[in-house]
Structures are given as C-alpha cells and as structure tokens.
Image 1 (spheres, protein in one colour):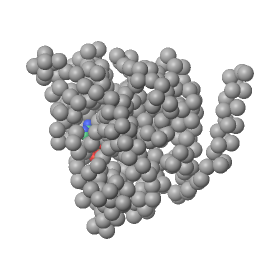
Image 2 (cartoon, rainbow, N blue to C red):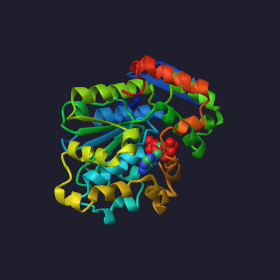
Image 3 (cartoon, protein in one colour):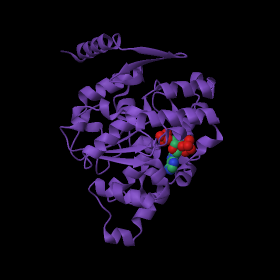
Length: 326
Ligand code: A3P
C-alpha cells in the first residue's frame, strides 16, 4: 500500500469510529467521548495515531497530568533529573528552551492530528532517555506503555479547585481559546463538574493513575502538586529513585538536588527569556501563559462559596469521604 493509500485508510478508519462516538457541544467546540473521556476531534486523531504507532522502550519516561495540574513543572523536573549527567545545570537546555519543547506531548505534538513521526526522531532533546508528555488518562494509554515495555510513568495530580482556577486563567491568557474565555466562570465550571471538558472527567483521570500506582508502584509514581510545593526536595529524590537514577552521596554534597529545584522553580523559569515569548502546538499555547502564581489554594480568590461546595461534594462522591485527600 502506498503512503497515500495508507493515510486514506487511516482516515476512513478514524471516521468510522468517530461517527459512532457520543458527542457534546460546548459553544463552538465539539467533544467526543472515547474510552470514557472527552476530546476534540483533532486531539482524538493524535490519540489514535499515538495508540496505534508508538513503540515504547524500557528506558522511556512518560509524564502524565490533567491540563493545569503542573505539567510544565513536572516536565522540567523530570528532564533535569533524568538528564543530569548529560546536561549539568549550568548547561541545561531548560535555560534556553521551554520545558514543552524538550518534552513533547505524544498525542498533541508528536502524533499531532494523526501524523506519524519517524521513530528515530522521537528523542527531540537528545537526552539520555526519551521523555514524553501526555494528558491522557491511564485508561487510554496503549499496551506498549502499560504492559509490553518497562517504561515508567510519573503522574502529577492537583486539587481540582486549583486546576479549574488555573484552567480559566489559561483561557483568558491565550487568544487560542476565545470562545472558552468568553464563557463565564460558571459555564466553564458546569462543564468541569460534568466531566465534559477536554481530557475530563478529572475524577476518573486521577483514579486511574492512583489505582495503577497502588497496584504497580514500580511502574507508576503518583505525585501531588501540593506535596511537591511543600517538600520539593523529598519529592525530587523520590522521583530520581523511581526513575532508577538516585542522587549519589557526592551529588547530595554538591547540592545537585537543590540546583535542580532552583532551575525548575516557577520564579526562575518564568523570568528566562525563552519562556517570555513564543508558543507551541496546535492550540498556539503561549509559553508565558504557563507560568502564573503556582500557589496552593488560589481558588479561594476566585470561586464563590457555592462553587467550592459543589466541587468539594463532587470529590467526596467520587473519591470517598476524605475528598481530594486520596
Ligand atoms: P496557576 O495557574 O495556579 O498559577 P500546567 O503546566 O499543567 O499547564 O499548569 C500550570 C500551572 O502550574 C499554573 O498554575 C502555573 O503557574 C503552575 N506552574 C508552572 N510552572 C511551575 C513551576 N515551575 N513550579 C510550580 N508551579 C508551576
């Protein structure tokens, strides 16, 4: 089969599947439900291509998050930790590139809208190990990531109250989402609570990774943004151990952990020239929009008491009596 025919047959297969999926409209955007989660068509194309064509290697690292849970931070830290022998801090590519340029999303960048990249070109940053990002739920990952390779998955979750707050600011800061930015906080909030926002519902997303990390702690490391803020050093050491590259006593003496934390801090990244300008991906996300306050509990400045109550009780319903403290 020629390349053209192959592409046509993939398009046909996509349409065959797509027409059968449940749909939901949010303003001008149409979302389809696939394996229990909601995606726009162009994102879904990338997901299917990733699922069909990606082949994981044992040494691969996949960093997974819901959008606005701290993806940029997790990508930066993972990149700095896993590549520290190749790229010492003073020569880190993180000083001249945005973390999202060094750790590409599988479904949004590498397999964007269904394209199939050359497998030899996947290590975009030339690091010691290939590191990939995804916003996909555990339930949507392909077998090559989950079962047939020994690759590791790092998941960062964040209190949905802060995720939602961050999310809405992100719409406002990016001209790429004018219709969502136009919607009131309440309208966006309804979609978030119904689970019909892109990559939602958040509760199944979080639960999928949580359960996998309990079942197979060597495969999936489950991290909390709040814990990462509170005790970054312990979390960074835990990440390095999980990735099979713990910090040596000599590195500890040389304060390499502290150096990585400083390099990846919000203040440092936000003020680098490379993060002030430029954008990435099909949604033209501005680098500058990825660094805001990075505070725990900022939701209290934006959500009304009734919105907070609704989300808190939804979390209790989905996660059990202790709510988000899962
Ligand atoms: P706020 O909007 O609450 O400030 P994502 O990277 O998944 O898009 O998430 C963005 C959120 O992470 C934003 O939260 C942003 O400020 C915060 N963030 C970005 N870089 C960070 C860093 N290096 N350390 C801590 N938080 C960071």
